[in-house]
Image (cartoon, rainbow, N blue to C red; front, side, top):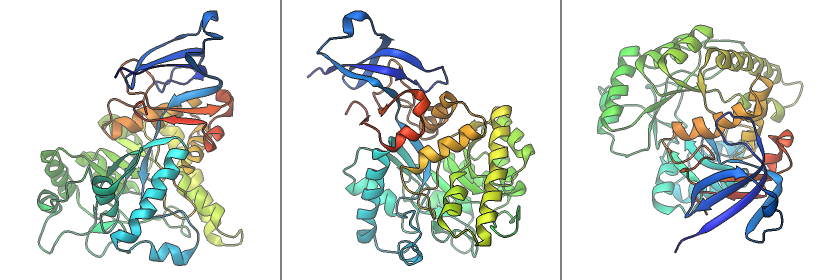
Amino acid sequence: MNSFLKIKAGWIIDGTSAPAAENIILTIENGVIKSLAPAGPETAQSASILDYSDCTILPGLTDAHVHLVMSGTTDMEIRETQLFVPYEKSAPVIQRHLEESLKSGVTSIRDGGDWGGHALRFVREDADITVIAKCAGKAWRADKRYGKLVGRSPKEGQTLARAIAEDGQNPDFIKVVGSGLNSLIEFGKQTPPQFSRQELSQAVQAAKKLGLAIMIHANGDEPVRIAVEAGCQSVEHGFFMGRDNLKRMAEHGTVWVPTAVTMEGYAQSIPDDDPKKAGALKNLEAQMELISRARELGVTLALGTDAGSTGVHHGRSLWREMALFMKAGFSLEEVVKAAAGNGADLLGLKDLGALAPGKAATLVMVKGSPQDLPASLQQPVGVMVRGK
Protein backbone atom coordinates (compact mmCIF):
# COMPACT_ATOMS: atom_id res chain seq x y z
CA MET A 1 0.00 0.00 0.00
CA ASN A 2 1.37 3.38 -1.05
CA SER A 3 1.84 5.85 1.83
CA PHE A 4 2.03 9.57 1.24
CA LEU A 5 2.70 12.26 3.81
CA LYS A 6 3.23 16.01 3.78
CA ILE A 7 4.71 17.90 6.73
CA LYS A 8 4.83 21.66 7.09
CA ALA A 9 7.94 22.74 8.99
CA GLY A 10 8.50 26.16 10.48
CA TRP A 11 12.20 25.62 9.90
CA ILE A 12 14.34 22.90 8.34
CA ILE A 13 18.00 22.15 9.04
CA ASP A 14 18.84 19.65 6.33
CA GLY A 15 22.13 18.23 7.64
CA THR A 16 24.33 19.48 4.78
CA SER A 17 25.64 22.58 6.61
CA ALA A 18 23.34 24.76 4.50
CA PRO A 19 21.64 27.60 6.40
CA ALA A 20 18.32 26.77 8.04
CA ALA A 21 15.35 27.21 5.70
CA GLU A 22 12.00 28.61 6.82
CA ASN A 23 8.42 27.59 6.01
CA ILE A 24 9.07 24.33 4.14
CA ILE A 25 6.81 21.49 2.97
CA LEU A 26 8.46 18.10 3.36
CA THR A 27 6.89 15.38 1.20
CA ILE A 28 7.41 11.72 2.12
CA GLU A 29 6.35 8.75 0.01
CA ASN A 30 6.71 5.15 1.19
CA GLY A 31 9.13 6.20 3.90
CA VAL A 32 11.42 8.11 1.54
CA ILE A 33 11.77 11.88 1.21
CA LYS A 34 10.36 12.92 -2.17
CA SER A 35 10.78 16.69 -2.00
CA LEU A 36 11.37 19.79 0.09
CA ALA A 37 9.73 22.95 -1.19
CA PRO A 38 8.68 26.37 0.10
CA ALA A 39 5.16 26.39 1.51
CA GLY A 40 2.69 28.43 -0.52
CA PRO A 41 -0.41 30.24 0.75
CA GLU A 42 -2.61 27.40 -0.47
CA THR A 43 -1.07 25.05 2.12
CA ALA A 44 -1.97 27.19 5.12
CA GLN A 45 -5.33 25.53 5.83
CA SER A 46 -4.78 22.14 4.17
CA ALA A 47 -6.11 19.30 6.30
CA SER A 48 -3.86 16.81 4.49
CA ILE A 49 -0.66 18.40 5.81
CA LEU A 50 0.78 17.71 9.26
CA ASP A 51 1.40 21.10 10.81
CA TYR A 52 4.75 21.55 12.53
CA SER A 53 4.96 25.24 11.65
CA ASP A 54 6.02 26.07 15.21
CA CYS A 55 8.84 23.52 15.07
CA THR A 56 12.28 22.97 13.61
CA ILE A 57 12.83 19.68 11.81
CA LEU A 58 16.30 18.19 11.47
CA PRO A 59 17.71 14.80 10.44
CA GLY A 60 17.82 12.00 12.96
CA LEU A 61 21.03 12.22 14.97
CA THR A 62 23.79 9.67 15.48
CA ASP A 63 25.65 9.11 18.73
CA ALA A 64 28.81 7.57 17.32
CA HIS A 65 30.23 6.32 20.61
CA VAL A 66 28.15 4.70 23.35
CA HIS A 67 28.29 1.70 25.66
CA LEU A 68 24.77 0.32 25.92
CA VAL A 69 25.42 -2.02 28.84
CA MET A 70 26.56 0.89 31.03
CA SER A 71 24.55 3.73 32.51
CA GLY A 72 25.73 7.23 33.31
CA THR A 73 24.91 6.80 36.99
CA THR A 74 27.25 8.20 39.63
CA ASP A 75 26.38 5.39 42.05
CA MET A 76 29.68 3.54 42.25
CA GLU A 77 28.10 0.29 43.40
CA ILE A 78 25.91 0.22 40.31
CA ARG A 79 28.84 1.24 38.12
CA GLU A 80 30.88 -1.71 39.35
CA THR A 81 28.14 -4.32 39.14
CA GLN A 82 26.84 -3.32 35.70
CA LEU A 83 30.10 -4.14 33.95
CA PHE A 84 30.36 -7.90 34.30
CA VAL A 85 26.81 -9.21 34.58
CA PRO A 86 25.28 -12.03 32.51
CA TYR A 87 23.38 -11.25 29.33
CA GLU A 88 19.98 -11.76 30.93
CA LYS A 89 20.61 -8.86 33.30
CA SER A 90 22.15 -6.62 30.64
CA ALA A 91 19.34 -7.03 28.10
CA PRO A 92 16.72 -4.84 29.85
CA VAL A 93 19.38 -2.21 30.54
CA ILE A 94 20.33 -2.12 26.85
CA GLN A 95 16.66 -1.83 25.87
CA ARG A 96 16.15 1.09 28.26
CA HIS A 97 19.21 2.93 26.95
CA LEU A 98 18.04 2.56 23.36
CA GLU A 99 14.63 3.93 24.32
CA GLU A 100 16.27 6.86 26.13
CA SER A 101 18.31 7.58 23.02
CA LEU A 102 15.26 7.73 20.78
CA LYS A 103 13.47 10.09 23.16
CA SER A 104 16.33 12.56 22.64
CA GLY A 105 16.28 12.41 18.86
CA VAL A 106 19.13 9.92 18.58
CA THR A 107 18.01 7.58 15.82
CA SER A 108 21.25 5.66 15.34
CA ILE A 109 24.10 4.67 17.62
CA ARG A 110 27.51 3.02 17.42
CA ASP A 111 28.30 0.85 20.43
CA GLY A 112 31.99 0.71 21.35
CA GLY A 113 31.93 -2.69 22.97
CA ASP A 114 31.45 -4.52 26.24
CA TRP A 115 33.25 -7.41 27.86
CA GLY A 116 30.58 -9.99 27.01
CA GLY A 117 29.48 -8.70 23.62
CA HIS A 118 26.00 -8.27 25.09
CA ALA A 119 24.99 -5.22 23.04
CA LEU A 120 25.83 -6.97 19.77
CA ARG A 121 23.88 -10.05 20.82
CA PHE A 122 20.88 -8.00 21.91
CA VAL A 123 20.66 -6.07 18.66
CA ARG A 124 21.05 -9.24 16.60
CA GLU A 125 18.73 -11.51 18.60
CA ASP A 126 16.31 -9.71 20.85
CA ALA A 127 15.96 -6.11 19.83
CA ASP A 128 12.45 -4.76 19.41
CA ILE A 129 13.65 -1.23 18.82
CA THR A 130 13.43 1.65 16.43
CA VAL A 131 16.95 2.97 16.94
CA ILE A 132 19.46 1.73 14.37
CA ALA A 133 22.35 0.21 16.31
CA LYS A 134 25.78 -0.84 15.01
CA CYS A 135 27.89 -2.73 17.52
CA ALA A 136 31.52 -3.76 17.99
CA GLY A 137 30.77 -6.71 20.24
CA LYS A 138 33.89 -7.46 22.27
CA ALA A 139 36.72 -4.97 21.74
CA TRP A 140 40.43 -5.82 21.53
CA ARG A 141 43.15 -4.66 23.92
CA ALA A 142 46.73 -5.64 24.69
CA ASP A 143 47.34 -8.12 27.49
CA LYS A 144 47.43 -6.51 30.95
CA ARG A 145 46.51 -3.08 29.54
CA TYR A 146 43.45 -0.88 30.00
CA GLY A 147 40.20 -2.04 28.40
CA LYS A 148 38.95 -5.09 30.29
CA LEU A 149 35.53 -3.49 30.72
CA VAL A 150 34.96 -3.41 26.95
CA GLY A 151 36.76 -6.46 25.65
CA ARG A 152 39.60 -8.97 25.67
CA SER A 153 43.15 -9.47 24.44
CA PRO A 154 44.37 -11.87 21.73
CA LYS A 155 45.32 -15.34 22.89
CA GLU A 156 48.91 -16.03 23.85
CA GLY A 157 51.04 -16.10 20.70
CA GLN A 158 48.22 -14.69 18.58
CA THR A 159 48.66 -11.39 16.76
CA LEU A 160 45.90 -8.79 16.79
CA ALA A 161 45.36 -9.31 13.06
CA ARG A 162 45.02 -13.06 13.45
CA ALA A 163 42.68 -12.60 16.42
CA ILE A 164 40.42 -10.40 14.32
CA ALA A 165 40.50 -12.82 11.39
CA GLU A 166 39.68 -15.86 13.52
CA ASP A 167 37.24 -14.30 15.97
CA GLY A 168 33.91 -15.22 14.42
CA GLN A 169 31.68 -12.89 16.47
CA ASN A 170 30.58 -11.11 13.26
CA PRO A 171 30.45 -7.53 14.57
CA ASP A 172 29.48 -4.43 12.59
CA PHE A 173 33.00 -3.03 13.00
CA ILE A 174 36.14 -3.67 15.04
CA LYS A 175 36.94 -1.77 18.24
CA VAL A 176 40.59 -1.60 19.35
CA VAL A 177 41.83 -0.01 22.57
CA GLY A 178 45.04 1.70 21.54
CA SER A 179 46.09 3.64 24.65
CA GLY A 180 45.27 4.17 28.30
CA LEU A 181 42.91 6.59 30.03
CA ASN A 182 43.25 10.32 30.62
CA SER A 183 44.67 11.34 33.95
CA LEU A 184 42.42 13.64 35.97
CA ILE A 185 45.30 14.50 38.29
CA GLU A 186 48.35 14.88 36.04
CA PHE A 187 47.34 17.16 33.15
CA GLY A 188 48.30 15.89 29.71
CA LYS A 189 49.86 12.66 30.94
CA GLN A 190 50.60 10.34 28.03
CA THR A 191 50.28 6.56 27.99
CA PRO A 192 52.21 4.30 25.58
CA PRO A 193 50.48 2.68 22.60
CA GLN A 194 48.98 -0.74 23.24
CA PHE A 195 49.93 -1.94 19.75
CA SER A 196 52.71 -1.00 17.34
CA ARG A 197 52.05 0.66 14.00
CA GLN A 198 52.84 -2.61 12.24
CA GLU A 199 50.41 -4.53 14.44
CA LEU A 200 47.68 -1.98 13.81
CA SER A 201 48.34 -1.85 10.07
CA GLN A 202 48.02 -5.62 9.86
CA ALA A 203 44.86 -5.45 11.95
CA VAL A 204 43.36 -2.87 9.60
CA GLN A 205 44.05 -5.16 6.64
CA ALA A 206 42.57 -8.16 8.46
CA ALA A 207 39.44 -6.14 9.21
CA LYS A 208 39.17 -4.98 5.58
CA LYS A 209 39.16 -8.60 4.41
CA LEU A 210 36.06 -9.03 6.55
CA GLY A 211 34.53 -5.87 5.12
CA LEU A 212 34.96 -4.05 8.43
CA ALA A 213 36.59 -0.84 9.64
CA ILE A 214 38.41 -0.15 12.91
CA MET A 215 37.43 2.43 15.51
CA ILE A 216 40.25 2.98 17.98
CA HIS A 217 40.35 4.38 21.49
CA ALA A 218 43.46 6.55 21.41
CA ASN A 219 44.70 9.41 23.57
CA GLY A 220 48.05 11.15 23.33
CA ASP A 221 50.44 11.98 20.52
CA GLU A 222 52.00 8.60 19.70
CA PRO A 223 48.90 6.37 20.02
CA VAL A 224 46.89 8.69 17.75
CA ARG A 225 49.71 9.07 15.22
CA ILE A 226 50.07 5.30 14.94
CA ALA A 227 46.30 4.85 14.60
CA VAL A 228 46.02 7.40 11.79
CA GLU A 229 49.04 6.13 9.89
CA ALA A 230 47.82 2.53 10.22
CA GLY A 231 44.54 3.43 8.52
CA CYS A 232 42.00 3.19 11.34
CA GLN A 233 38.68 4.66 10.22
CA SER A 234 38.07 6.74 13.33
CA VAL A 235 39.90 7.93 16.42
CA GLU A 236 37.83 7.93 19.59
CA HIS A 237 38.55 10.54 22.27
CA GLY A 238 41.94 11.82 21.03
CA PHE A 239 42.72 13.85 24.14
CA PHE A 240 46.16 15.49 24.11
CA MET A 241 46.97 14.23 20.62
CA GLY A 242 48.39 17.57 19.47
CA ARG A 243 47.82 19.67 16.36
CA ASP A 244 50.14 17.65 14.12
CA ASN A 245 47.80 14.69 14.48
CA LEU A 246 44.89 16.86 13.41
CA LYS A 247 46.79 17.63 10.21
CA ARG A 248 47.40 13.90 9.71
CA MET A 249 43.70 13.20 10.19
CA ALA A 250 42.76 15.80 7.59
CA GLU A 251 45.27 14.30 5.13
CA HIS A 252 44.21 10.68 5.72
CA GLY A 253 40.47 11.31 5.96
CA THR A 254 40.37 9.91 9.49
CA VAL A 255 37.17 10.68 11.39
CA TRP A 256 37.57 12.10 14.88
CA VAL A 257 34.99 11.46 17.63
CA PRO A 258 36.15 13.76 20.47
CA THR A 259 33.69 12.76 23.27
CA ALA A 260 34.30 16.08 25.02
CA VAL A 261 31.14 15.72 27.09
CA THR A 262 32.81 12.94 29.10
CA MET A 263 34.84 15.55 30.93
CA GLU A 264 31.87 17.86 31.44
CA GLY A 265 29.68 15.03 32.71
CA TYR A 266 32.32 13.76 35.09
CA ALA A 267 33.08 17.25 36.44
CA GLN A 268 29.39 17.89 37.10
CA SER A 269 29.00 14.59 38.95
CA ILE A 270 31.66 15.09 41.65
CA PRO A 271 32.02 17.57 44.55
CA ASP A 272 33.68 20.93 43.94
CA ASP A 273 36.48 20.14 46.39
CA ASP A 274 37.47 16.94 44.59
CA PRO A 275 40.80 17.64 42.80
CA LYS A 276 39.64 15.50 39.87
CA LYS A 277 36.96 18.10 39.09
CA ALA A 278 39.56 20.72 38.22
CA GLY A 279 41.46 18.11 36.22
CA ALA A 280 38.39 17.16 34.20
CA LEU A 281 37.58 20.80 33.43
CA LYS A 282 41.15 21.45 32.34
CA ASN A 283 41.02 18.40 30.07
CA LEU A 284 37.74 19.69 28.64
CA GLU A 285 39.25 23.08 27.89
CA ALA A 286 42.17 21.46 26.07
CA GLN A 287 39.81 19.25 24.06
CA MET A 288 37.71 22.25 23.07
CA GLU A 289 40.81 23.95 21.68
CA LEU A 290 41.57 20.87 19.57
CA ILE A 291 37.97 20.71 18.30
CA SER A 292 38.21 24.34 17.23
CA ARG A 293 41.50 23.69 15.46
CA ALA A 294 40.12 20.55 13.78
CA ARG A 295 37.31 22.61 12.28
CA GLU A 296 39.83 25.07 10.85
CA LEU A 297 41.92 22.26 9.34
CA GLY A 298 38.97 20.47 7.75
CA VAL A 299 39.06 17.33 9.88
CA THR A 300 35.88 15.26 9.61
CA LEU A 301 34.25 15.10 13.03
CA ALA A 302 31.35 12.98 14.22
CA LEU A 303 29.59 13.35 17.54
CA GLY A 304 29.89 10.67 20.17
CA THR A 305 29.25 10.97 23.89
CA ASP A 306 30.76 7.80 25.38
CA ALA A 307 27.34 7.40 27.01
CA GLY A 308 27.64 5.08 29.97
CA SER A 309 30.62 6.95 31.36
CA THR A 310 30.17 8.61 34.74
CA GLY A 311 27.68 11.46 34.38
CA VAL A 312 27.14 10.80 30.67
CA HIS A 313 23.59 9.60 30.10
CA HIS A 314 22.26 7.94 26.98
CA GLY A 315 20.41 10.19 24.56
CA ARG A 316 20.30 13.41 26.51
CA SER A 317 24.09 13.85 26.54
CA LEU A 318 24.24 14.33 22.76
CA TRP A 319 22.73 17.82 22.86
CA ARG A 320 25.39 18.75 25.41
CA GLU A 321 28.13 17.53 23.04
CA MET A 322 26.49 19.63 20.32
CA ALA A 323 26.57 22.66 22.62
CA LEU A 324 30.27 22.09 23.30
CA PHE A 325 30.99 21.94 19.57
CA MET A 326 29.18 25.25 19.12
CA LYS A 327 31.17 26.75 21.97
CA ALA A 328 34.29 25.63 20.09
CA GLY A 329 33.21 27.59 17.00
CA PHE A 330 30.87 25.33 15.03
CA SER A 331 27.68 26.85 13.66
CA LEU A 332 24.42 25.08 14.44
CA GLU A 333 24.19 23.85 10.86
CA GLU A 334 27.76 22.52 10.98
CA VAL A 335 27.18 20.64 14.20
CA VAL A 336 23.96 19.10 12.87
CA LYS A 337 25.93 17.88 9.84
CA ALA A 338 28.54 16.37 12.18
CA ALA A 339 25.88 14.70 14.32
CA ALA A 340 23.64 13.56 11.45
CA GLY A 341 25.52 13.37 8.15
CA ASN A 342 29.01 12.50 9.35
CA GLY A 343 27.63 10.14 11.95
CA ALA A 344 25.49 8.27 9.42
CA ASP A 345 28.43 8.02 7.02
CA LEU A 346 30.62 6.61 9.78
CA LEU A 347 28.03 3.91 10.49
CA GLY A 348 27.64 3.13 6.79
CA LEU A 349 24.02 4.33 6.76
CA LYS A 350 24.01 5.86 3.30
CA ASP A 351 20.23 6.37 3.24
CA LEU A 352 20.34 8.56 6.34
CA GLY A 353 22.05 11.71 7.57
CA ALA A 354 20.27 14.46 5.65
CA LEU A 355 16.84 15.75 4.71
CA ALA A 356 17.05 15.42 0.94
CA PRO A 357 15.14 13.71 -1.88
CA GLY A 358 15.94 10.01 -1.97
CA LYS A 359 16.96 9.78 1.68
CA ALA A 360 14.97 7.70 4.14
CA ALA A 361 12.58 9.84 6.18
CA THR A 362 14.47 9.89 9.46
CA LEU A 363 13.86 13.13 11.28
CA VAL A 364 13.41 14.89 14.59
CA MET A 365 10.88 17.63 15.36
CA VAL A 366 11.59 20.09 18.17
CA LYS A 367 9.54 23.04 19.37
CA GLY A 368 10.72 26.49 18.45
CA SER A 369 13.14 28.00 15.97
CA PRO A 370 16.77 27.03 15.31
CA GLN A 371 17.73 29.56 17.97
CA ASP A 372 16.31 27.16 20.57
CA LEU A 373 18.68 24.38 19.50
CA PRO A 374 20.42 22.32 20.69
CA ALA A 375 18.70 22.65 24.10
CA SER A 376 15.27 21.95 22.56
CA LEU A 377 16.48 18.41 21.83
CA GLN A 378 15.82 17.67 25.48
CA GLN A 379 12.15 17.25 24.57
CA PRO A 380 11.49 16.44 20.90
CA VAL A 381 7.82 16.54 19.94
CA GLY A 382 8.28 13.87 17.29
CA VAL A 383 10.78 11.37 15.92
CA MET A 384 10.55 9.36 12.70
CA VAL A 385 12.92 6.58 11.62
CA ARG A 386 12.78 5.41 8.01
CA GLY A 387 9.24 6.65 7.65
CA LYS A 388 7.88 5.13 10.87
